[in-house]
Every structure is written in C-alpha cells, then in structure tokens.
Amino acid sequence: MVVKHKGGNPVNQTRMGKLSKRKKESQAFAYLPIGALLVIVVAVITFGFISNEGETKKRTGNLPQAKINELLGRFKELSEAGNIESMKAIDKKLYGVDFPPVLPVLAKGWMNIRYQYSKIAVRYLHEFIKEYPSYVDKQLLSNLGYLSLELNEKKQAEEAFRSALEKDPNDGELMVALAESLRAQGGEKMEEANAWTEKAAKHDRKALAFWKSVREADSYSDLVNSDVVDYEVKYIGFTPKHSNDIAIVDIPLKSSYDDTVTIIASNLREVVQKRKPLLVRGGSDKLWPGLKFWVNDAYLKEKAGKEYVYAMVDDRYLKGFWSQRRLMRLEDFINNQERYYLTSQKLAGNSAFQPPLRGNLSSDFKIPPLLDGGKPKSVNFWFGNGEKVSRLHHDDYENLAVIVEGRKRYILCSPAEAKMMNTVGNIKVILPNGKIIYHESDSSHGEHFCLNSIYEKNVLSGCVDVEAHSGDLIYIPGGWFHQVKSTGNPKHKAVNIWWDFF
Image (cartoon, rainbow, N blue to C red; front, side):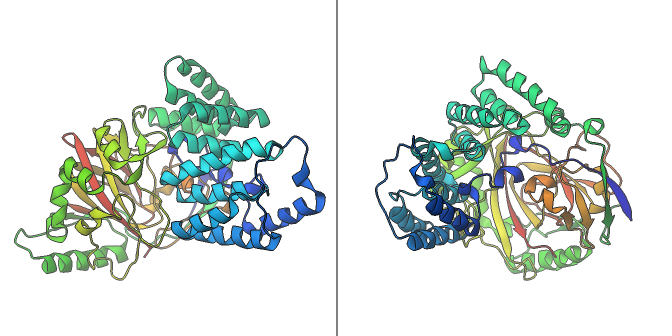
C-alpha cells in the first residue's frame, strides 16, 4: 500500500528542548567528526590560521601535534561511552594547549554527557569566544544558547541567540530560539518574543504549522508545504478494530513474585509477536515492592535528592506541550514540581538506568526476566504534578511503563494509521514489524513527533483508548503512535523500560 505524506523540511524543534538535526550538524570545525577535524588541523598548521591578528589568547601549553590528535580522538570516544573519569584526565592534559580546536572539542564532549557537565561546556565555549573570536560561527553560538537555556541562564541564552542571528539574520529556527529565551524571562520581554515568533513564521510555513499545533494542539495541515513523498506500508501486525481492542491481563492478588513474572512474561511474549498493546492490571507491587515508598517525596529526596536531572519547564505549556529543559538536582525539582515535569533522560554510559535511578533508588527497581531476552536500552523515571499531556509521537523501541502513582490515559494508534498522524519527518517505509524508517535528511528524534493531536477528538479507527492506574503496567509496541494524559492527586509517577525492537 502506498500513501501520501506531506513533504518539506523538518519543522523547528526548539520547544522540544532538543537540538534539531540541523543544529547537530557541523558548520564549524568544533562540531565535525574527528576524521574531518584532523583535516582542519592540517589546514590550521599549513596555512597559519592560528596566528590570526586580533586573537586574545591566554593559553601557552603545547603538545606534539600527533599527541593532540590522539587525545582529541580518545576524548570523543570516551564521551560517547560516558566514561567521565577518563574524560577528566584527558581534559586536564588538553585544556591549556594553545590550539583552536581543543576548547570546542572538549565542550562538545561535555555537552554529550550533559547534566552538571554542561556547565563545563558553557565555560569552555565562552573562553573560546573570547580567545579565538575569528573562529566563532553561528552553530557554536546557537549551541551556547541552548545550553544556557537548559542551565536557566536566560539572559545569557538571549545574548547567544542574538549573536548567532547577526551571523545569519534569516535563520527562522534561531528566531524561534531567541523568542524562547525572551519568553522564558517573561514580563516586558513577552512582546518582543511574540514579534520574533511571527517573524520566524514568515521564513518557514511548516514551522508556523508546528508552532500553532504546539500552542493549540490542532492540525494546521493547510499551512504545511504541499509537496508529497510516497512511502510504502509493509506493516502486517495487529491493528485495532475499535477503541477497546487491547489485550488485558489481571494479576491475582495472592500471586507470588515468580507467578507474576510468569504471567506477565508469557502474555508479553505473545503480544510482542503480534504487535498488540497490553494492559496488565496490578502486579507491580509483586515485582517492585520498594516502589510503594516512591509516593513519598521525602523518601525520594533522602535517597536521590542530590542527583542531577533534566526537567521540562511546563509553566507555559498549553494543551499538550512543554518547553525547554532545565538542569537541577532532584530535590530542587521536587520542591518546585508544580513548574516542572521529569521525563526521559539521556545520560551516556554502560547502564541503561537513567538519573535518578542509577544511585540509591536502583535497589528499588530491578528488571525481572520479562523481556524474552530483550536488552533494556533506557530506563526512566517520570514525575509530574497536575495534568500533563504529551505530544503525539512514536518511539523506536518497545516500551513497558509501570504506573507508580496517579493514572495515565493512553491513546495508542497502529503504525498502519501513520498517514493520519502528519509526522514531522518524511516517512520512507513502514516495516512489517511497525518500525518506521525516515528519509536520511530527517534522521533526528524530532521526526517521530506529529503535527496533529488526536487527544480531544474522536479516537480514530486503528487506535485504542485505555487508562492505566497505580500498580498497572502497559506495553506499547515500538512504532505505535501514542499520546498520553497524566493525572494524579495531584502527583503522578511512572517508570518506563525501552528495549530493542522485536
């Protein structure tokens, strides 16, 4: 089956708190792969770029060029592996070297680690701007802006985005980013923020559609680029016939740990093969008895309060979206939970468990043998206060969510319904297992999000509408679109496990 999909470039992802693919791509040597970096290293040496007039350097250290290249390459590898202690050792050797690529590469590495190490990246970028001003480009400034927003340095973010726009006054994404930094400051900045938003919309009609869908949770498909791209749907898995068409299993109250594992694992194995969602009612207390303590915020602060997490600012969200991430300790998040929402984290390293689940809380949540040999890719803690509604999207992993406190209403739609979802990215093919492949030009996570919202409309055929409560588990097959409303009294908490596609 061949369907039509709206084309055009990926829309702006500023409000998702993520760098878009274009922002991940390099425009300066600081962001190039290490192989390309070495070419520039040669150019720097050959053409004498280091001696540009006007540079104000304070670095006097020196190392043989081959050693610098070796250390930069090793630092990049360590960053990707999340080996923080070894990164610190190489950072110490390279930091004082008078060679332009060093500071941006170090900053890039710490940016990949994020969390409190983002502060190091920001400091290095500022030092680079001061010491090597002729090398500063739009990409470096925009990354500085996004990092500053995450660290809640709103004015600093504004200055970085303004400087980036001076280098490219027609960049619509930077206009929206500047608007976001102004809006974060509130007050008299709001009028200018709105003006920049409107100006940005004139440069990108699809960005305008996305912006309005963010604000109003509705589709503005008439504003989206009208070009179409054909794609093939090979999906052969389950597609619901009505809104209650979901597998359900109840865990008996007197079930033991082993019995509960057996019941869930056998049912999960069956639905994974069929690509069918599953609601498990009850049972989490048998598998994770320590979760009963997580409803007590004082317990969480005692166990993991000093751990760093990224939280989404939700004081400006409207009908289904929250804004930029902020770095803070878990205890600070808990003390200000009305303003933030804790979502998935992305700390690199060998462990799938993400903050704050890597430390003292890890003893409360071990993964039983439920995944039929599947290896967990990421385990996250979700925590909100008051109603939260996610944007419609799909994931590239199998997903098992455990409701710790409150409840979540899920609308789940088969990959066969992708044509109705209006994804940000341009779909290339939908595989038989439901995995959605995008064109290479759209290879960022933002492609998985949708311009449409289905939450406050009649649920489409091919979708199910189900509510999970405290103690329940729910399985969402990879590739299935979902939109989630989380509510509580007033808090809601959950843990989810992502693992590789079936």
